[in-house]
Amino acid sequence: MIALHTAQLRAAYLRTELQSLSPADAADALELVCVQSDASDERAEAVVHALVELLADPALAEARESLRAEARARHLLTLERLLRRPFAIRGSLGAPSASVSRGDERAARMLLEDEDPPPASLPDYGKGRPLTLGERKWIARRPPPDLIPRILADPHPDVIRTVLASARVTEEHVVRLVTKRPNRPEVLQEVARHPRWCHRPRVRLSLVLNPATPTELAIALVSLLRRSELALVFEQSALHPALRAAAHERFERLPPMASEDEGELQ
Image (cartoon, rainbow, N blue to C red):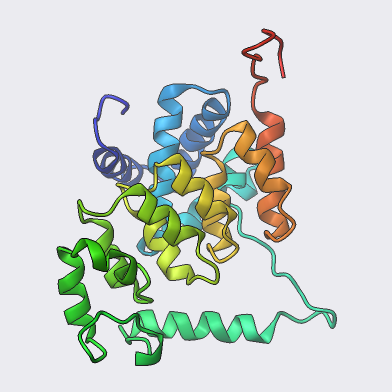
């Protein structure tokens, strides 16, 4: 698969291959790939990159759940770590946070109904009035350079998806977007699934370090991080404990690296 020259081709090829396998066979194959990736095998790393990109697609939620069930039932530990679902953080009375639940429910409803956020939350496009979703998407297709920061501040994921495909958007633009706090989980998810940006190391690490990134997605991205990045993640107390635990587990499993200065193992 490494012979395929673009991330899009690799993801499409992997999707086709997985669709031809049963969940059990797919889980077996992916467990082997994940183990080899942890051992720094270049071909396996390319497959895991494509897998993480696929898993960021909400349309594949059912397939992801099937793989997770196989990994947990059969103790495929490396694949299970990549597919891990975070546990709920409970408040002092042992109940999930009501504000988080309401926020997630509201965001999901907006996406399902293609609802536009209220005008007060939209960036100023300099037109003297709030623009419709269609107008904002049209501008995002060929964004004027001076408007790119405003377009990237748009809260609707359709606008973000459109502008991320523009050749005028740079890595610096995207890093600023994913490091912004507070942020919207559905916006960060669009960055994580975009074939142009999801493989950029700075973008990937910034996504993992942003607490607004969906934790399940951030845990999958951990499988693509290097040792120094993993150490940074599990030291961040603001991140979900399950995310930090996944980063620590992978850090412990990676082979030691030789020091460039001393030629010693670290």
